[in-house]
Length: 512
Image (cartoon, rainbow, N blue to C red; front, side, top):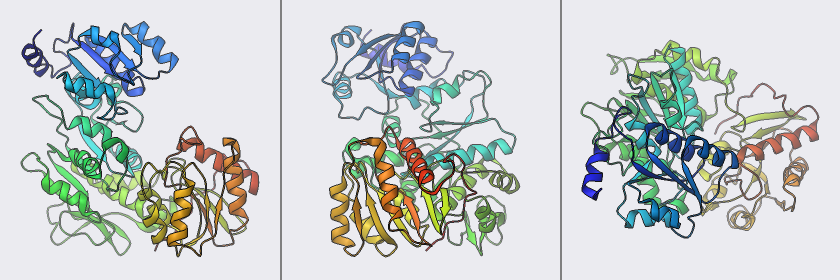
């Protein structure tokens, strides 16, 4: 078909029940997202060719079973099989940056480029009445906020699915035969980059959306801080009811001010200070809603208290901010403050998120391996007054100097791990020369955490927190942040005694 005929056909594919038969689609990537895309398209009747540089053997075999073709390669450009395929459409997995050879080739060839989120939105009516969408992004706190939001919705009696970048592809949720009332969709900046280029005449239009915060990250993928910011800002596009933003982060406010939204959508701020009308915030230790009530100019609704959150290990400032953001999202849906309070009374954070591993001899050992960038580590460090900091890994092009300078007074010592140790130690030399720094550089991955924990124990004293908040990615020495956290917990257990899987009741972190 001609390019004009192709574009007309694609414009009409806005339902699961449209005619997708015979559409030739190239899918880039075979991770969880890429496989869900291929599986969906085959079910719709499209002809599918998956191109990936690496592939899990099980997923590769499953492609044969479902009837999709697969070719390994693409790092240097399109393989012959892709050129001969004559694709009508390309669906790009979020791991493929815009400068990747395959993405560049597809763009120059004039092929439409979709992400998995656009495809999911187009076919969201598979199980009947489409679910409402709540979109969540931000440099940090996305997964926790998504989990809290989904839990609050379930408490309110709604069928809710946390999905997207949280680990369950949106397309898998869309195809669940049981159907859902609400999807809480975690979106990475990579997914938002491709979503901004959506070509459907019915673009993604969430009921509510939030960008939790913004700090430089993934600059090697986006190419610049501006491009990263622009991708994140896309979360607010076409929002219908509530654009939720962080009052403490002016960048998120500007995103809302500049967003093209549906008429009537409101800007709802959240923060740890006293809320104004149309805000959620804190008054005298009480989390309050002054946005979703008729008399918001002179009254407020109580959600919960800091003391109640402390009993659940949820009182760290950045966690409280996430709670306020989640509360704003579900209040836009109609969840009551009482239902939010009931949810929080039973909620606990995932492993590796400011998780207290042990308390021994007055020293608290905390696993925040999920702090994979400087912004997340900043929030974690701010929660504790005296820290022996285990830091380092892959810095992803981010300068850690400002973080070191900000927390020089609370860091008693630093234990530096990872490939980019030189940049970390240099930052301490320049901005915290009085802080002892110990480098750990074993060749064996299995020895990294035992050595780091031993080094930390040699300097930590009663009243200190030994904090694993690396401010860096983990893939230089570990499979992922979860393995890094598990090895830390195991090493701590070996040091202080007990089973690493037997976690104590979370303690309340301090604050500035």
